[in-house]
Image 1 (tube, rainbow, N blue to C red):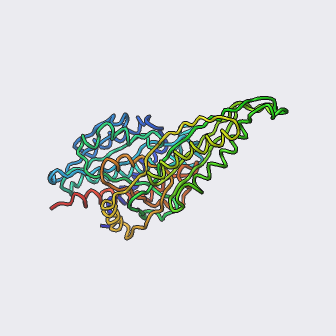
Image 2: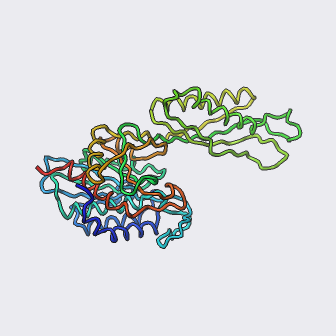
Image 3: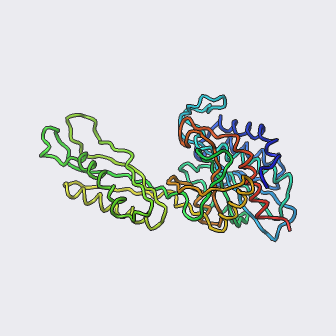
Amino acid sequence: MAVKNRFAEWLPEITEWRRDIHANPELMFDTHRTAALVADKLRTFGCDEVHECIGRTGVVGVIRGRSDGGGRVIGLRADMDALPIEEATGLDHASTVPGAMHACGHDGHTAMLLGAARYLAETRSFDGTVVVLFQPAEEGGGGAKVMVDEGVLDRFGVQEVYGMHNWPGHPVGSFAIRPGPFFASTDQFYVTVEGRGGHAAKPQDTVDSALVAAQIVVALQSVVARNADPVDQLVVSVTGIRTETDTHNVIPQRTFLQGTVRSLRAEVRDLAEARLGAVMRGVAEAFGATVTLDYERGYPVMVNHERETEYAAAVARAVAGGCAEAPLVLGGEDFAYMLEARPGAYILVGNGESAMVHHPEYDFNDEAIPAGCSWLVGMAEERLATS
């Protein structure tokens, strides 16, 4: 299979699409310009159906093969949204929107799926139907869940679904994947420690909420070190601490904590949530304070299906000559919701030696486009092979 020559020929044009999207980033569900661009191109390519406003601002294209292939349908998904980060690349195609940039490469994902859709609509070298899913709000909005909850997979008869993410530090155009748990669940917690405020010179008359909060921060690490099995992956990070006053001579009545919990197994996730509450309450009680915990579950663990992972790896080997075992990732990915609803797999494509994703100096490497497009097309052609 190898990289398809057509994508080398189309690289300047697909790069232009990608850089246009990069220069005009949109956040969460407000991907109106990007969605309009995607829908217009899908119609220009000759897709059989183009549907807008799916999952609020998502776009779905339907491409039918030479026959219905016995009703076989696969989905290919790309995310479209950017991040609330001020870009620091200094590139000619840098963000023109203050406080927003494509710091995770979703501009590249969208451009690669557009390139694949163009090729599939032109060649139709498959039996069955390909559904291309352009999703908003991966970065914290759970756009995949919104699309699934709206019934997008049922509506278009999707039987298997595949996705891709670029990955800095891996050779450009190389691939890596793993079966089973891959990306972590992403939970958040918000804590209010209630003490008894007072004058900083008379601590004996107070219950120092800042002191209690500091003890909680330290004690929470026992959840990882002494409650979870050491072979399991679990991260508990306190990422913010503040008091209700910044006055130097006042012991605060309330101190606030926030943080995140990452895990790769549902049982570990449950354990962490339970133990966080118990540890916080125990520490607070020991100091005469009280604590209120708001624990919010975010994206679930993203789990690649074993058989579909091998399909994805086989196509990657055909395109790139190999496919490495991917590392476990403690970041989150809302493609997890689609993989809960349908069998499928998620693969990494190398972005070269760039800044890491979510960094203000990151940029998607356009040289990865031919490999990414070829893998997407290869998944469609292999899973819907002509008889």
